[in-house]
Amino acid sequence: MIEERFGLLCALNAVDPKTFRCVDVQSLNAIESHMRIQSGQETTPDQFGLSVEQDMLKAIVGAPKNPILGNRMAGSDALAVSVRLDLSDLPFLLDEYRKLFEAELNAEDYQWVNNISTTKSAAIISALESALEARMSAGQFDGIWLSIPEIIEWTTVKGFIYSPHGDGILHPDINMEGFRKTVDGPITLEMLRARHVHCADADHKRVFKSWSVFKCLYAEIELDGITHVLNDGK
Image (tube, rainbow, N blue to C red; front, side, top):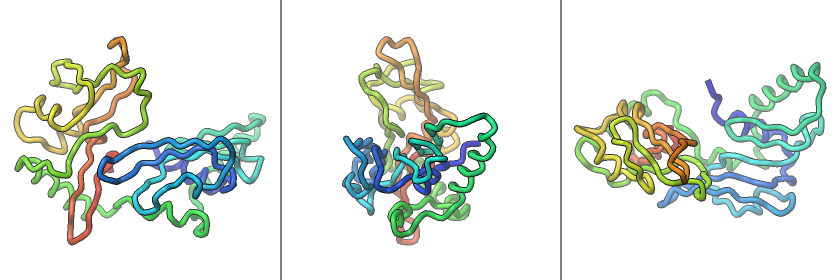
């Protein structure tokens, strides 16, 4: 099981906030964009021009304050560290990374990171999913679309294939209209979790990325006067 944001939270607690080199951001605006912003030199998070109201931080790269933890650290869901160590040091380091993940974020430096938070209430999630299914069953797809859930290298992409039951047709992009043409009957969340989108390379010989259709689903749902966004499968 992958612990979401494990690497990101480790890195935020470990990295010197003056040494950021790269950030990945997902913007929950009208076009739901993904961005990777790299700096030519070490800098602070505020220099990347992020919107604390709309941008969800997905990954960072920087230098840890404590050199024992590594020379460079990249954190997203996974944690990647450039560090010199003896094998006997590994248990100690793994325990330190666990502690970083479990620690509270520095409120002064990173309070904005949790401005957009994930809904964890099972009751609310169930109500949102029921409302979403009802809208799709009624053919109401305003505010609901499909989008690629991560940054990809477009120069290597030939197209996208829906499976199963997609007839192997290569689509230049993913969208709800194209997906609906591969579906007989109503669209359900169970179906979206079972169906997949495959990203094929320029020679149409190799699939190098795959996601469930549910992970590609973006939906804005209002519940009790609060707008919730389904994004990246959550």
